[in-house]
Length: 96
Image 1 (cartoon, one colour):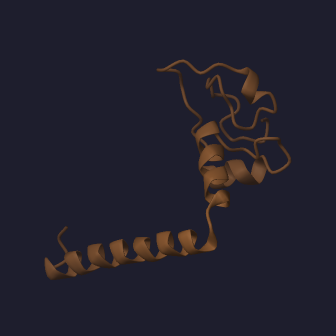
Image 2 (cartoon, rainbow, N blue to C red):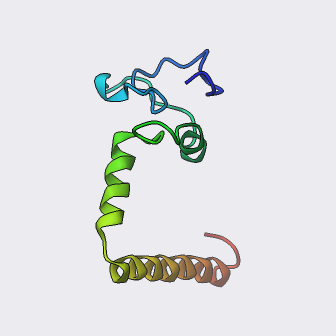
C-alpha cells in the first residue's frame, strides 16, 4: 500500500493493495481507489487479490472460464465495432 502514489492522501476504505481488503466494508458514496488498474496489478502482483477490485476479479475469473472459441468471437466482435467507429468518423469528415 505504501508504494501507491496516493497513499498519503487516499481515504478509500477498500484499497486493492491492502492484503486484508476482503475484511473492509465499502458503503455507497465512499471514496474509490484512484490508481489505474495496470499500476495496481504491478504493485499487487504478490497479493491474494493481485491488486484488483472485487468486480475486476469476477470479470477475470469469468474470462478464464470461457472457451478459446468464445474468447476469439469476443475479440473479433470488438474489432468490428472499432472499425465501424473509425469508418463513421472518416465518413463524417473526422467529426464524431
